[in-house]
Length: 160
Image 1 (cartoon, rainbow, N blue to C red):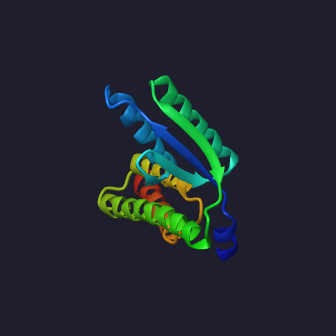
Image 2: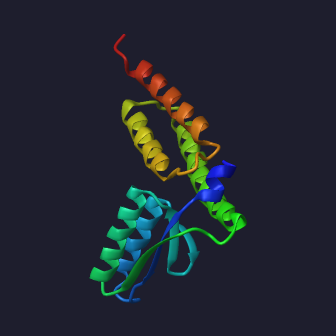
């Protein structure tokens, strides 16, 4: 990961939205959260630059402009390896927290396994994996937990 950390290019979105109405602000916040963006300071967020994240930030910027705000997207590398490592760590911490929450959901659902719950857990796993740009440490544990639950659910609902 050291090579990756020292060479990461980031896409930045700087934006400002009017306070009222609040609906566009909430919509932008939710989009950024779904993308897994790291907030650097108010109105400035970052993601590792790749075609998908660049396009996603362009779409968010467009939504900001349509709501009467201002938005700019940039690509940059942090000024030091330490800053870059900090951004990677912040993304991994946030994604790791989401994986741990998913594993807690799996544990809570064990008492009543169903294919619907397994399907919901798989979808949530895929959403988290889409935000996992650097391979958070709990990724594999969460994947195994969801797959074990799905297997148990399939067995529980199989005709006897």
